Image 1: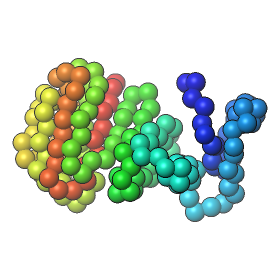
Image 2 (image 1 turned 90 degrees about the vertical axis):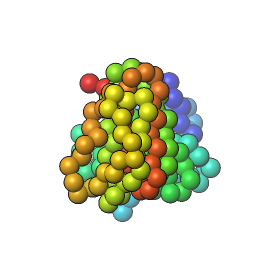
Image 3 (image 1 turned 30 degrees about the vertical axis):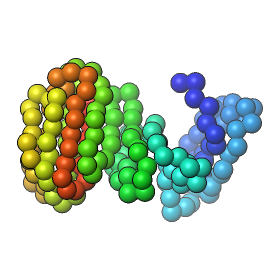
Length: 173
């Protein structure tokens, strides 16, 4: 990826030693934590980014094979939003963000967009640029999810909501 971090944070219990050595050779600072701790490595990294003044964060590596970690990382997006930070989590096929008012989604025609409520009730959901538009819709966390696998009609779509928090996911098969 060619990305050189400002700092590397974590307990490094699953880190490849060759990668650690590579970044040490580049004089990148490390902030090492014990394996037994209350925070995940991603939480520690986000705390460090906030201390450094980050206002826009992209989490890479937060979507993995451990569903518990993936779901916890998705919920960290809400924590970041509530702290005034624009954040998203990405991997090769997915981009996830949490919104409370409006999001403009950039992608490719045919990308799939799913809207999943994070609040008990998300009200006033309106979409533009999707195959199956929603107008002032309501999604609740304890009901069937009706907003999965919508299709982008062009390279930009828009989602607005009046109340609540909503996961907006752009996915590719």
